[in-house]
Length: 209
Image (cartoon, rainbow, N blue to C red; front, side, top):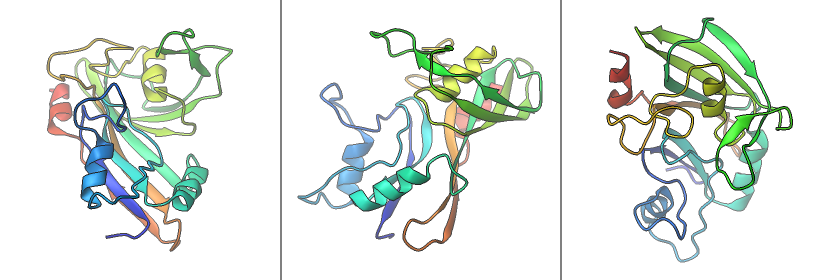
C-alpha cells in the first residue's frame, strides 16, 4: 500500500464527494472505510469524476501530496486519458477541440461553448467506428467542468446517455458512457513513473454493437 496516494477505480453512478444532498454511498465514505476510519481523516481527491463517470481517480493522503499533484495536472507529468462512446462519429480519425467553455447562466449547472468562457482544449482519437456510434479516446489539455461532455456535444457527437448534453438511455441508469481509462504520472515523492489502466466497462462496450 502506497504511503502517499490511493488510486481508486470509481464505479458509476457513485458520487465522488459526500454532501448534504447525498444520503447514499459516496467514494469519500468508501475511502474513509478503506483507510480504517481514522479520527483525523480528511478526504483529498486530486481531481474529481462526475457521478455518472467511471474510472481511475487519485486521492492524496496528505495536503502536501494533494498540492503537488494538483500542480502537475494537465502537464506531461500527469496525463489522464478517457474513453467515451459517442453518438455519431467525428469526421476525422483524430483531432483537437479548442473551444472556450463557460456556464450557460448563473443558475444552471450546464456548461456551453462560448467566446466569454475559459480556454478549453480536448484531444481526441477514434478507436472504433460502429454503425451509429463510435468509441473515442480523449486526453484533456485543460480541466473545465464537463469539458469532454460539452466538447463532444459541440461537434455533434454527444456522449451516449448524457442527460445534460445528449439523451439519457435506459441501458445506462444514472450514468453515461464516459470512463477514465488511464493515468500516467510521476509519483510526487519517489519520482517513479506510474502507469495504470482500467478497462472499458462491459455495459459501455456493448453500446457499439
